Length: 133
Image (tube, rainbow, N blue to C red):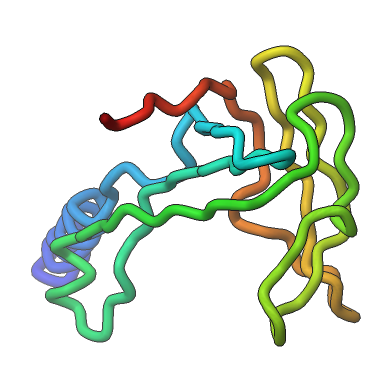
């Protein structure tokens, strides 16, 4: 009987810890673009979970905001990953970005033997970024 009560308490405590660490994470629904000369800059944002190195950090479930800005040659149609410039020493992209009106689908991968997908892949609503005076 004591063993059964202990297991119930342990299960309940485990569920509480799991739910406490479940802060909302993921890519934001909107991506923002600006014109930069003859190119465009697209900024995507996401909430990511901090890495937990101990159980107490995992329970807190802290998050941070991350962003990625990529340069694209146009703001409509299909853009091949090979058309997106990357800094020297970084892996190039494969895959595509497809833009139709105000909708954007990102399906990019790092150009390596493993074909690792970007955490930024997904559907976005594309909106112009407000200029700050």
